[in-house]
Image 1: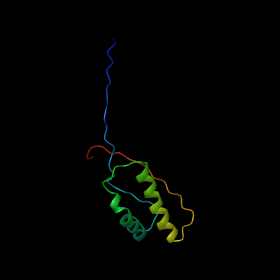
Image 2 (image 1 turned 180 degrees about the vertical axis):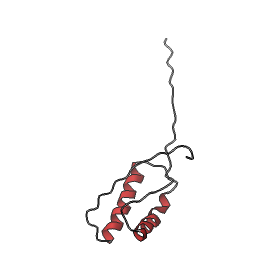
Image 3 (image 1 turned 135 degrees about the horizontal axis):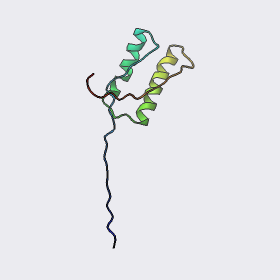
Image 4 (image 1 turned 90 degrees about the vertical axis):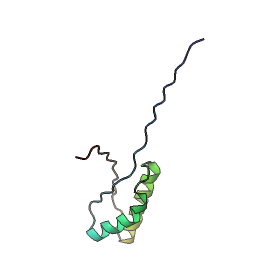
Length: 81
């Protein structure tokens, strides 16, 4: 009989701590932030990215941006600077 060892490494997924928005006016940026505020603190996964993109697209469609280019990037920063 052979011994088999299984090593399991658990890594916590990162949480959303900040949202940076570029390319909109100050008032539009604040409105998008209000709509996305409930996402802060949630675990970043594919579903969160998709719902965030859909929220931004809905907002921009309301403002007559019919075909916006939306790029979402994960950025992990360690330390305090």
